[in-house]
Each structure stands twice: as structure tokens, then as C-alpha cells.
Image (cartoon, rainbow, N blue to C red; front, side, top):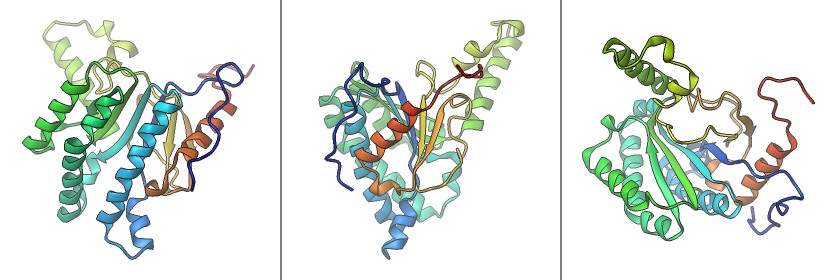
Length: 248
């Protein structure tokens, strides 16, 4: 599918784009299987879609783009596939950071780093430090991430703080809780996109997506284009966001 289509309408002639778009990048394995290729071939092609999504988000005025790179459940996949994914992650962190930095993109990684190898954690730390002052787009990549684990971790830390007398239980509200999630300092997603036709969140940003608009597209992630992103944003702009209030 070609990316060469008209951009979104100019500001003032249409609703603004979402501030924060989150994407569940699904379909790499099925894309490869349909072509008689090993699953890793789908993951490799998926990295090209990541580049397109980042460039498209920046061009369309999106401020935060979160990509579900590797879930806590993905550790259950065959060891060879996990190894291939970690290898691709290393290549991305070594090869893409200079380009992200040149384009004013800040990288943030969320998730349980304790399960990642030490060399990958070092690469993540270096990438975040290199890009921390950039403000054109914040690219958030969820690695070894699970929404339920995120919530449990925040609850555990708040419980410990309360037990030690550093916070009163009655002072814990939604804002306080949100500050203890991996996404502290990142606005909640306005739009969550899932590729490949599946219609579920799969343990992704469960707390944060409470009022997000959900758009499910049939395109498999390796084929995801700027046009797919624009189409999802147009669908978002057609919806009325009420946050639990009555329709206007």
C-alpha cells in the first residue's frame, strides 16, 4: 500500500490529531507464514513498519507514540524466537538511535528490565540518555511489559510506602497511583490501534487505556503504512469522546 496520499487536513479545518497513539504491533508471524518464511522474517519486516510509523507520527503532529514491542507473555515463546527478537532489539538500539536523535525523537522504554540481558539494558540506558532532551516526538517502546504486572507493581510500591509511613492510605488516589506506573509523565493514550484484525488489548496499557478510542485494522504489522495510520486517526476524529458523560 502506498504512503503517497494527502496529509491530514490543516489545523482548524478538522479536529486535531490525537496527542498519544499506542499501537499493538500484531501479525508478524502470520505475515511470514503466508509467504512460506520463518517467523523471524516477519519480525525483520516489522522493524521497517516501525520506521514508517515513527516518521508518520512525527509528520502528522502526534506527540507520543507507544509501540508494544515485547510482552511479558512473549517470554513463553520458543527460545529460538525469543533469541531472534532480542537480536533484532539489539540491532535496533545500535542502529536506529542516531537517526532518532537527529530527528528530535526521544526514546523511552517501559517494562520489566530485570528479565532483559545486561547488554540490552545498557543499550537502553544509553539510548534514553542520548535522546532525553529531544521534544519533536516521544517514542515509547513497551518491552517485557504487561498491563496487569504494571498495576500490581504500582500497588506494591504504594503499599510499601504506606507501611513505612511515607504516605497515608487515604492519600492514594488515581493521580497518585498513575505516578507509580511505568508510564509516569506520559499522557494516557487517546487512540489505541491493533493490527492484523485481532480485537483485544492483550494486557497492553490496561489502566492507561480506560478512555482511549480503539481502532482495529486488518493490515498485518509488516505492511502497516502511513496511510493506515492516517485512516485510524480519521476514524478517531469521527468519534465523540465523552469520558463517561452523556452525549452532547
